[in-house]
Image: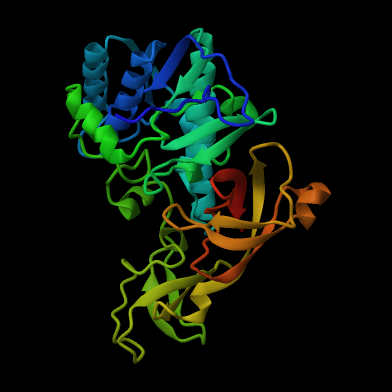
Length: 379
């Protein structure tokens, strides 16, 4: 079994931090957080599990498996030999995350609620609650790493780049990161599964959760229609030709192919249709044919609501890597901070190569090699 590197590791130029004694672990009922708790227990920490209930509306066993997840948490805690408690953050989630989610969709953008959930719930409401329990630190099953360097806490990519979740954590600040541990940061997912099976965790073979945390795997359009009104309108080509009818701009995202309702044979070519833009003023969805259509590509983007993890502006003379979506590889770019320096808290990126379907409402996250510097919301 590979060694697990925690924030108190000693590397060249890195300050040793005294290991905390009491660690509260956010346990979801999944294999990742369960193994994280076990690893910390094995290393001698006083571990307490905390199960967060963040969603109550339409909470049923088909899509939101809260009841089964809690059973799994209790079973794992019993096997590991730790105390566990449940806490309800549904009110905080609805106020801090879900209201923003609906507001963004209403404005024609495509938000990433998991990013905001991490900043506002898992590493704020949860962290505050853990501190009230007397914790020295909190831990989660995220695939990421933290380290101390030159008096600051840095967020690093996970060793297993295929599972790296630093993109979702880019809004965390120094205060939050200084109290966070990611025990899985230097492990591969296969190793985590092997550990779970070796120690006999009851959820060792449990399927990884997918989808937005409060939606689960339910049909997204059906879920959203319960909260946002349907406002049908025309689908048009960039040339102004009407080729169909949409059910409401909020139900589509840039680059979307499935669910548009247009066959490839319409308007001539047999190429598939993609969403290329939204004309909010005229309630019109702009669609194009073909993955290579120029309207789907851009070399620049602008952001707002920026967070720099170190609390410092990055050096604009350096080339960086950036992600405009979670599964994307780092795209080489140049950073422009003119507006940020004016106190407007935004930046722009100029990419070396064209980027496909840069989507307003998603996050643009900046990296310098393995270090996540922060990011902002694409506008």
